[in-house]
Each structure stands twice: as C-alpha cells, then as structure tokens.
Image 1 (cartoon, each protein chain N blue to C red):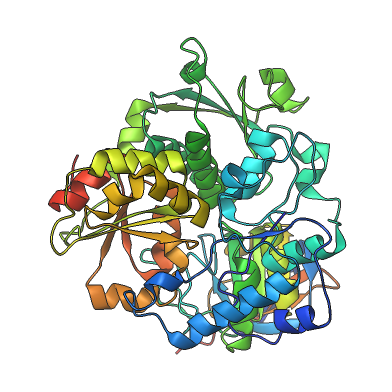
Image 2: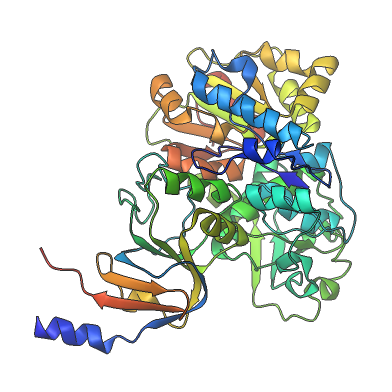
Amino acid sequence: MKAVAKAVRAVRPIRVKRAFGAVVEGEALVSTEGFSPRYDLDRWSGLISRPGHALEGHNIKDKILITPSAKGGIAAGWAFYDIQHKGIAPKAFVFGVTNPVMVQGAVFAGITITEGWSRSPYDHIRTGDLVRVDPKNKTLTLVSRKKSA
Amino acid sequence: MGAQKRAIGTGNFSLERAAKLGAKCARPTTTNARCVDFAYVDQLQQNPDEVRKEKELIASLRQMDVITADTCINYQTLYQPHLGEHVAWGDTGTVIYANSVFGARSNFEAGPAALAAGITGRVPAYGFHLDVHRRGSFRVNLKADLNDLADWGAVGKLVGSAHQDYYAVPVFSGQTFGAKRRRPSADELKHLGAALASYGSMAMFHMVGVTPEATTLKAAFGGNKSQEIMTITNRDIERVYAGYDTQKNPLNLVVFSGPQQSLFEIKLLADLLRGRKVKAGSQLFVTTSNGVKSAARELGYLQAIEQSGATVLEGVCFYILQNLPQMRVREGWSNLVTNSAKLANIIGAHKFNTILRRTADCIEIACTGRDVK
C-alpha cells in the first residue's frame, strides 16, 4: 500500500487547456480511440456498442471519459442532454482535441468537459483509477490507483 | 441557417415551451433530417409514441417560424450562402460544404445553438468565422481517378481518419484536377466533405482551383506552412474497399443515405435500377428530401426505383431512424452496404457491420446478394 501511495503522490496533476463545469471525481475510463455519442454509444444503456471500438463493452455511466479526440458530428448536442436525463451520462469528458458541438452539448447537459492536456494522460492514468477534474484550476489529478481485485 | 431537431430524446428543455413563450426565428431557419417518415411508420413498425413526439416537435418549430424542410442537403436544395456570409449550420456534411465550397462561414452548431442563432440572429465570433482558422494546415496530393461518389468518400475517410482535428484544414491539389482539369461535381464534393467531417471531425477543406478561397495553393495556405503532404493514389482507394469484410453474413441490406440523395443521385439510381429487381429477402433503402422526392416523382425516377422493390424515404436519415436497433434485429440485418463513406462510419453504434462499395456495385449487391470486388 505504501508503494501505491507513493506512486500516486509522484504524479503531478495534468494541466488541461480549456475546461467548463463542476469539479468532479470518478473512475477513469481511458480510451485510445476518439468518441462520439452517436457513432459509438448505445444511448439506452450507456455501453460503448460500436464493434471494434477501443472501449467496446464498457459503460460510460458516471465515469471520467478520457479520449484523444471528438468524432463527427453535430447530433452530440442533443445526445449528451438525452443521456444525462436518462441517467447514463459520464461525470466528465476529458478530450485531447474536441469540437464545438461536444462543448455545446456538454455545457447544455451540465456535464463537465475539458480539452487539451499538458502531457499525455495515457502514461499516468489507467481505466479504473480514481481521478479528479477541476475545471476552475484546469487540472486532471490522479487521486488513487485502481484497487486490485 | 440550419437548426436540427433530430432525436432530441428525453430531457427537460422544451421547444414547446419556447414556442408558447413566443420565441420566433429572426433569421431564415430550416431543419435537418428527422427520425420518422410518416408515410412509412407502419411498414417500419415505429413506435407511435415517438411518432407523436416528432409531430409535436414539428408543430413547435413551425410556431417559431422555422421552415421544417427536414433535409441535410439544404446546401443543394434550399439555400446557397455567398462568400463570407455567416451562417449557423448543423449536420456533419453541411458545415464543411458551406465553409469549403461556398466560402461561407460556420462552425459545427448543435441543435440548441443553431436555434439560438436563428432566434437572436447572432453567432459567437469564433472558429471558422475567423480568418485565422480558415487557412490550410496540410496538403493532400490527389493522384487517384475518383470516378464514383464512394471514391470521394474514401478520400475523406483516408484524410479524416489520419487527422481527427476540428481545426485541421486539408488543401487538396494534384493531377486529379490539374493536367486533366477534372472538376468534381457538387455531389462528389458533398461525399468528400461529409466523410472528412465524419472521420476527421473537420469543418473545412480547400481544393486548389475549385473552392473560392483556394485560387492558388499559396492562397489556400494563407501564410501557413503545410505540416505534411499526403498522397492518395488509386491503390489507396482500392485498399479502402478491400478493408471491408462481409464476415460471412448475408448482404441483404443496401442503403443510399447520409447525406440524403440529390436529384442527380436519384436519377443515377433510377438509371441503374430500371428494369431490375431487388433480390427477394434483401432490402434497398434510399433517403432524400421531400422536394427531391416530389421532383423525382414528376420525372419518373421515383417509379423506376420503387418498381425495383426499393423503399424511398423522405425527410429522414437512415442512421437516425426511430427504432433502427429493433429493426436491425427483427429484419436479421448484420451487414449494411452503402456508397456513403459517412454512413459506413456513423452507424456502428447500432452494431451494423458496414461495407463501402461503389454506387453501381451497391445496386448489383442489392439485386444479387453477391459482393462485387
């Protein structure tokens, strides 16, 4: 446990470039592939349903979704609002690069969203880790490592 | 301007309430494709409750002075903005067409933002409204023949997949429209743009000697240095087609949609289908706007398509059809064959295995059930 705590302390927060929304803390869901709620998501269950997607079979509900890019597309504006009201939205979207529709959609739905990072989160954060997104201070912080089963 | 209202889904935001409060669009506003063609609700076994909601939505929008044309090809059928005109458009294919082919200025605007722009007559000054973001960022040398709409979509797939960035602006040049002076048609540019926007989340491209802000290569880059030069050959295009696999499942669904078909595309489909029959057990869907379908009826194209057994839907896009996941299971669809690279990309969430093929090959597959390679 000591070693784990040390490892967590050693990870400085990642700076995000732009951010909006409330401070949220949750389990990271880390994708090497871009994301669109229209192209990739089953909007009734929250499962990533697109065959072959890097996160196929994972559920985004209450997660901090870390993804390199936004895919598509315009319909996300309503789609985020829709999944928020169905109770299957993630707590935050952490994008490498995104587009205005994702931002509009997230703001409209009240979901925290960030774009850009000072260094790659892929070296530090893994799916299942507990992370915190702080839009005001523009930080993405590793809170604790995933507890091994 | 284009507001879209497709698949709003659940939520507390109420267009009905906005309409009752007297909100009116101060600028001409049209709607994007919807989820239901009311004439086909029974045939497609769509949910009556959702159909009712769609009707209510249309009524609210009309109350707000929105023109509910329900088309994603407004740029071909309804309104062609001029160079430098600021618009607030939605749909993956329309924004890139407005910016690139017309030299108008728009960002990707989601439904609520587009509607707000329609009501206020204002858009925030950011992104592609500003000169700085409209300059080319990398060059694409086209060395492919590109004789089919699907070939242009394949270019969009190759370029978009490799550059998933809203602010990446490809500059197309090369022999395709150099020595041979090959001029792409509006439909070809439409498929290119829709695929770039879909695979790359891009909102603008230049084509030297073709698009208005790219009179020369230098003008297209506007002082930017090209970050790279990408070359696309016939072999690259063939590789795209070879990348799709039937997974040994039947080829029983062919779709021409995403974007809706223009009258020219409808005529082409009519010419290819005249006197032929869609294979028993297979289905062929075409989506277009009410305006194009009405014209196609007058011209006899619609009859030629429908007599083959195909279904022509108006005002919708295939991938947002209400109840599509249920339809897929009920009809035993696994593969979806299309000439639209965009559609091949976007329908994955519904668990279709998509296959991009050239237009005539799609028709062949619809009529025989056999892949054409």
